Image (cartoon, helix red, strand yellow):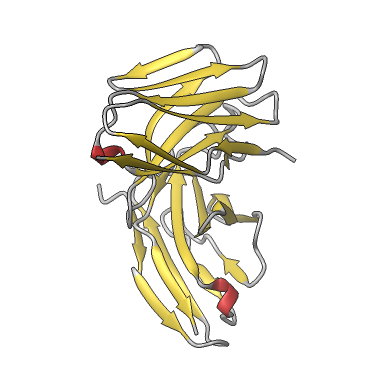
Length: 113
Length: 113
């Protein structure tokens, strides 16, 4: 089992560019989510999915899109990058949304200049 | 909405001493309380969790206590070692497949030589 695989590990974007952060899990987990981590702000939920074809917004969804066409994959799209989106992004998966261990990807450090 | 408060935000303890991190939660129906450890540059990983049918759980030098009446839970690390230096996140959710997990903002623990 690879667990949760997240790519890329580092990325630099120019303001206005778009990109997709990839996330894949091989544990057949129902629940997948994206967080951003900023100093002093903890882990803030961007978007989440409780199964293929179902997505919903978290705490800080603006500027991001997601889709879940398969159980395994949950990509995060930045539509038009802004400096405020400079952050470390983590994808996570778990069997269910509540009450079970969350497995995190290795993280993506994104810098928008 | 649901909220998890975590204190302190930074904690420095002498190697060999004990460290205590405290969290309070607002949703009285929460009954699953995990703790995650994030080493520098790494992903968060589950280190211990507790369910509301028990008041305390231990795993070697780590213990978690829960007071459901007061809606607070704590992480205790005894005989601290340099490898305990990390950011620790508490979280709370219901034992329900559809309930969101809410993270605290994290505590940066420094173990002093």
